[in-house]
Length: 582
Image (cartoon, rainbow, N blue to C red; front, side, top):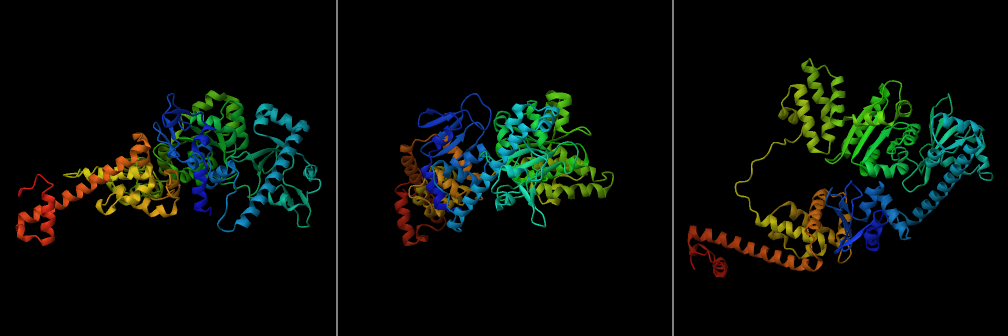
């Protein structure tokens, strides 16, 4: 509900060079700035930032986008979060189309709730220092003080109302109930949610405490107790340990997803700094999207029991929509009665690294798990294998991996590849024969014009689209033209790009943007290139019309042409040396 006009104005006020330079050191190189890409490992800079276009592009991995895209990819933020982060950096508030007054009140309420959580976090940290029992427990689990401090680990004392020490005058305030720090009995008596537990603060991408996880010391149920869903905290969107893991995630380009807080902390203690955990819930699509924004490879590392395998299957199902050709997901399982915490303490980092290295790719895990449910010695079992795979194949967003899975299913089921594709409603990927006489001139011109219109969107209004044949490029130009009235005068590509976020042709826009970044066409050359393309387009039209008239004249003679066609024919013939009547 953020107004489009605000987003466009924000992009005008943000300098993408200044923004990216806060995270990646940029060097001037001609009209642009360059650096080693923050999204993949490289030794030679291939990451280019254009101040004139307010756009970045990596010639190595293809990463590209605007200031908003950069924050989303680099920090793992959602779209709205990135907008708020950019707005905050220049000291402006994000309006809300629904009701700006309500929005302001909501922001103030959230700030109050964050302050409550920060006070509780500080209280738990101080309580840990005073509790010999809690400190000894962490030492027995092999945690150093440095690791405990890094994750902000604290302790909730045994008393029913220990938090009163942190909120002496406000223990009965509604905010403590809202964020789940206290509970209320039927008689109206309040008591602490967390008691005699090790406390793990849950931190968002901005470094704010939005929830807590509490682990019981010794025996007791539940083993883990989490904050409830609150205005600050949605379990299905957050990952424990993400802020602490961010540097290692970038360095290794791989995330390891485990099940518990202690698993993440214990792995970090032993040098595995890229582990994260979901928060008392199965892996969701939002988790998968957030993970795959951060890294190219995700390994799910779960217990080897039935519960662990069910959790892995849920992770697989919710990851399919987010996969691309550049991303990979794999699965590994721990030996019986082990979890990552106990495994790495007993066997060390090298053994754990080997376990991760040998993780089964998503394709293998998917096929093997489906096979377990089917009797492949019977026709019915083989048919069920394909039927069970169908909804999963249709959810895959990567056609190349889908094709590989189709081939594996064909081999396992006895169906042919074409039969599996037909039964699952999947388009065949058989190579198509080339067209007999491809016409290169018009598509080439259309692509040139589309690239130029992306660099300077206002140019789209000067292109006679009726002269272009139906094509992907013409469709892109039509979309640009439709969106021009919603953009500022003389809009930049960055403003156009954000206007088209989520559009069905978004991927094609990105490909074209990468092409013009590689061409490195100077700003003062764009108008000349554009006029040249328009001239060639008009010339192609004239030649095409003349060819049609020639054909008609050869069939019916000059007398078969209308008066208007004769005039057109004579005018065109004077410009065309191939005219047989000259």
